[in-house]
Amino acid sequence: MTQLLTCISPVDGSVFAQREALSTKAASAAVARARAAQTAWAARPLQERIDLVLAGVAAVGAMNDDIVPELARMMGRPTRYGGEFGGFEERAQHMAQIAAESLAPIEVGEDAMFTRYINRVPHGVVFVVAPWNYPYMTAINTVAPALIAGNTVVLKHATQTLLVGERMAQAFHSAGIPEDVFQNLFLSHDTTHTLIAENSFDFINFTGSVGGGAAMERAAAGTFTGVGTELGGKDPGYVMEDADLDAAVDTLIDGAMFNSGQCCCGIERIYVHESLFDSFVSKAVEIVKNYKLGNPLDPETTLGPMANVRFATEVRAQIDDAVAQGATAHIAPFDTDDGAAYLTPQILTNVTHDMRVMRDESFGPVVGIMPVASDDEAIALMNDSDFGLTASIWTRDLDRAVQVGDRIETGTVFLNRADYLDPGLCWTGCKNTGRGGGLSVIGYHNLTRPKSYHLKKVTS
Image (cartoon, rainbow, N blue to C red; front, side, top):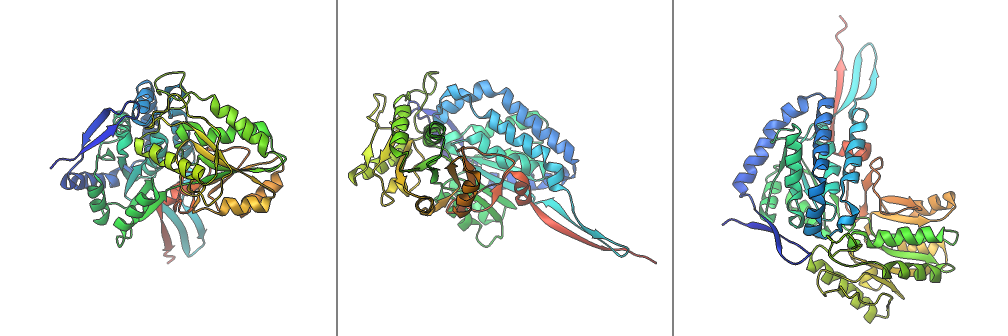
C-alpha cells in the first residue's frame, strides 16, 4: 500500500504538500544508482566538482522569491526574515574555498627508499537526513562538502519541510550535477531503517531528535557504517557582572525567540550575575512584549507559529509545569495565541533545575532566567544538562571568558554573541547532543576516509 508523506501547514492547519514514499525496492534501486555513479563523479577534477556545487547553490538562490513564502507555509518562519539563502551560500562557499587544502594529501616523508603519504578518499554514498527547522542550511552543511569530496549523496528531508529536498535536487540538476549523483528521496521511517540495516550507505549524517539519532544508530548496528549526529540542545547563556548589558539582552533574547525558538543552538536558559539580574529581566520582558505573533506571510509579523501543534503542546506543558512549581511567567497571553501552533513567547524566573523547562529540550519560544553569584555557580549550572551544543558567555574580559569556556561541557563557546554557525569552525556537540562534526576542515575529514600509501622505490 502506498504511503503518503504529508506536510500540514502551521499557518492554518491545511495540507500544504503531499508526496508518495518510495517502496523499499524503488529506494534500494535509487541507492544502487548512486553507488554506480560515484566512481565517475569522484574521478572528475576537484575544481569541476566545486564549480558544479556552487552553480547548484546559485540555482537555489534564484528560487528564493518562491522559497521564502513556501518555507513560511511549511514551518512558520516569517517572510520578513528573507529565508536562509545567506547562510546557505556562506557555508557552501567556505567549504568550496577550503576544499583543496582540506582534501590535499598529508605528506609523511620521502627519502631515497620510500614515499609515504595519506590521501583523503570519499566514503562512497553519503545519506543525509535533514531537519525542518533550518531545512536548507542544515542540509547544505553536509551536501556541499560531501559532493565536493567525491561522494554521491542521497537526501531524505523532514516531512514538515517536504519540498526542500525536491527544490535542492531540481537546482543542482539544472546546474549540471548528474541526477544519480545527488538524489532527493521520499522515504518512510520503515524504508529508511531497512536501507540502513542492509548496509546501503557508507556514511550517514543525521540532524534531529535524540530519539531519532538513537534509531539511526540502532538501524546501523553491526553494519560498521559511520553515523554522525547532531541531536538535542539546551544551550545556556551566562552574563557576567561586567557585560555589555544591552547587547547581552538583545542577543540572548533574540537567540531564545528567533524562529519561534526552533533553533538547534537557540538559547534555552540564561544565568545572569545577581548584580544585573533585575535589569536584565526587565529589559528582556520589554523586548518580548513587543513581538508580533501572527501569520508568517504578514510582513509585520515578527514571531510565527511553531512548525507543528504537537511542538507547541510540549512547550506549553513545560511552561505550565514550571509555573505549577513556583516559576513566574512574565508575559501575558497574546491575543493571537490560539492554543495550538500560535504560542505566546514566555520568559520565566524563579526557575530551578528541578523543572523540565530547565532540563528538557524546549525548542520553542520560552527561556528560563536564573541569578548566579559566581563563575563557579554558573559553570555548575551550565554543565548540569544532558546536552552540549553551544554556550554563550558575556564579559569584557577575554581571558576570563576562555577560562570559563574551558570548563563548560559544550561543542562551541561563544563570547559576546550567540546562535550562529561559523563554517570555519567545526559544528559539533557532546553528551546527548551527538557525535561527529560538520563544516570546517574537520567536516571534510568526517566525509572522507584516510588511505595510506607506503611506497618502496626500486633503486636497482
